Amino acid sequence: MMPKLDATHDPARRSWVEAANRADSDFPIQNLPWAVFTRAGEQPRGGIAIGDGIVDLKAASEARLFSGAAAETARAASAPVLNDAMALGARSAAALREQLSDLLRADGRERARLEARAATFLVSMQGAQLCLPVTVGAFTDFLSSIFHTKRMGRNNLPPSYKYQPIAYNSRASSVRIGGETIVRPKGEFRAEAGEVGYGPESSLDFELEMAAVIGPGNALGAPIPIAEAADHIFGYCLLNDWSARGIQRWESQPLGPFLGKSFCTSISPWIVTAEALAPFRAPAFKRDGDDPPPFSHLSDEADLKEGGLDINLEAFWRTAAMRSRGAAPTRVTRTNANALYWTFTQMVTHHTVNGCNLRPGDLIASGTVSGPTDDSRACIAELNGNGTMPLTIGEEKRLWLEDGDDVIFRARAERHGHVSIGFGECSGVIGPMVAG
Ligand code: CA
Image (cartoon, rainbow, N blue to C red):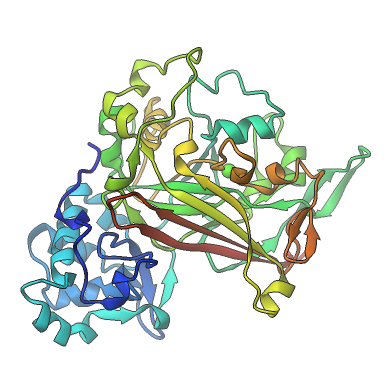
């Protein structure tokens, strides 16, 4: 079932953590996203963001701040990765969200007692280092934006595009949280003139994507029906599917991308729960009248009505020179997750329709979230017309990413009558090429 609105979404609710009440905060009391964090010399453990702080779920557990299913969930989330806590399912996550929202609310009954003890369970974000929140057992990358698919295919769609969500199995071992250096890959490519070469990738690109993080999995041989698919999605994060276009072009026939994608993928450290996004659901993509309707296993009334997500996504690009003089990064993309032709629930159902099993912590990425307009092109290959039109970044010209450039993704869900929530950042700076 799609998550529903309850008191935790109440726009009037404020927190005694003052920074959470600022209009531009990504982490108001209505959000409460999950991450894993550590501080010098300490074990990584789960935490939940509130304003400029992190609720330390291990410390809060030990202080017995929660009861029932919420206590069980917080205990599971005290581990160095969140797979086991996410596997408990939406009801457990909702129980924790409900109790934590009550503990943090400005008009809560126990406010004075909690505020006095805040130092024992509330950590400053500034002093904390965020870690990969889950052990990523599998990472699947879909191709759910019809606009991206058309631009990249010079207006041709693959024949099955409107019948089923298309995906490939990408690499899980090289998924990292944002903030790390992206090492320029080396590989084989074919130059314009036709000769084949080997060396550092010169056409390095980003792809602005969203990913669903799987909560409870399914058994091998037991597909997830579309009406139950939402129960298997714990939450969502931003994802940068860094792409080496030269390597990708040369290697992709007939089996699809391999080394052009597997060198590194960045995700945002904060996982926004599906429940937090309940106010920002949107109808599924409106298909053209002559598009084939999805087969019955991919079609569901609730999914049609609210299977989409209304989330604004932005990509920023900054050169090393801009960074050294403190200049603001150049925004190159402004798009929305509601541009996706397929919903995440359709992707999850399609993924399992052959009996394939998903496991807690698996990443199901949307593919590049490009929209119909020029400013919503969500990768460089679209923005530069497949390498033909340089972009202006700050005061410099760029065709592709150069060493020292960084890319920053941000996302916010905004809707009239609701408190906006954000995803934090997913960033990466391009470093020199891989050794050897
Ligand atoms: Ca991709």
